[in-house]
Amino acid sequence: MKKIAILGSTGSIGMQTLEIAREHKNEIEITALVAHSNTTLLEKQIREFMPKLVCVYDEDKAKLLRDNIKDLSVRVESGMDGIIACATEDSTDTVVAALVGMIGILPTIEAIKAGKNIALANKETLVTAGHIIMPLCKEKNVVLLPVDSEHSAIFQSLNGEDWKKAYKILLTASGGPFRGLKRSSLAHVTAKDALKHPNWLMGPKITIDSATLVNKALEVMEAVWLFGLGVDRIQVLVHPQSIIHSMVEYVDGSVIAQLGLPDMRLPIQYALFYPERMNMKLGERVDFIKVKQLTFEEPDMDTFYGLKLGLEAGRLGGSMPTVFNAANEWAVARFLDGKIGFMDIPRLIEEAMDSHRIIADPSLNEILKTEQETYDFIEGIVKSGK
Image (cartoon, rainbow, N blue to C red):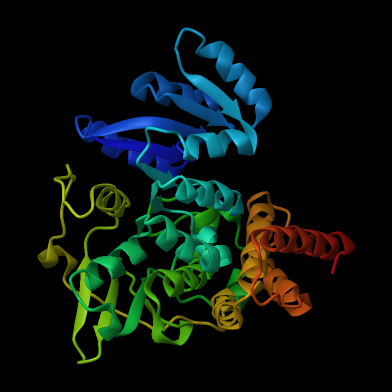
């Protein structure tokens, strides 16, 4: 019986993880759930899965939830201490780290220290703190498996092979809803436009990141830590059909790929049950007669220059990936609120990166301080009207 805690249970990844738990109810027990503030959905999840412990980050919402489920013997915590309590719950063996943003870093570190295996769906954890996370996993003998479809595909393409013989990673991207457009066409796009992803069903933040291609930059930085190849040995390749989820080229020229329909339940389930493959009730499977062709393009890094900035942040390393990520987080949130334009996202990232003095090997406190300084810097730019 797998005993699983889900950090971010009311988000897209969390809800799809619970779909898998529902389908495999004899193999999965939910031990803890974390949500930011959606107590309506969280209460439904609690009554269905009966975890031992839950956390609502917002204390006022946590009080409301305690009243609403006082008929149940479920403990309700709040704040960062509550998230960490859920991440380290005694009976849990695997933590699904699916919180959005850098709020997920500390709970993941504490879960690793507690010896919990990690199914990682929080890019920011490795992008900003990979130099802390990966050695800690080794020290604590913890298995960290990626939930992102691309990183799961890379892992599967490396499985059973000598990782030292990998020559290059081919990291695929759909191209998002604005593939083929130029900068002049993107000046006035709205959040509603950007949220219309052509292939994937994801949360709003990652959907905007896919539209700007910033998501691919974050995935490259994450892949560096997961698979031990440098930024310049990871090639981003636009693949509009989203059937090939990524590939590995080996030193002999052979290429191994993982294919499937664009369905996040596949990599989630793979991470939860690895090394076993479990049956999944899919509406359909890949039909190559219907697909007909698989096509590839170079990403347009002039129009979608957030990708170019991210690759540079990855090459520079140290605290620069934190600046890139924090600037993007701040900008995406304001774009979704209608306060800045779509092309302001990469512009603000670039200004933040240009102003930053790199810390070569940042501690967790320095990472979090850099995050806050980046937020403050960008807010100052926007308030000044620059």
